[in-house]
Length: 69
Image 1: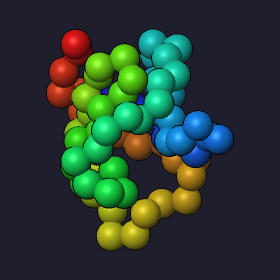
Image 2: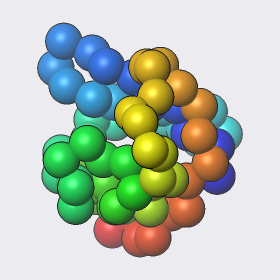
Image 3: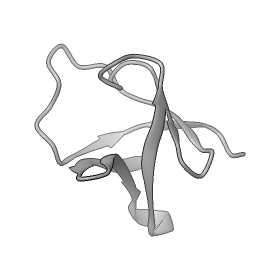
């Protein structure tokens, strides 16, 4: 699923275009979110792609949704 990750004054946010959904990242497996899972404020969890260097934000990436709570 394609998602856009961007930095906001409240923190990192994910936008899911197909669902018209904007949610803050509230928890992550790894400090930089890349390469582990990231949990959104609505309960969804995404497996984030790994990068050697953190990409410049905003960035659109392919992430796999792990759960729908």
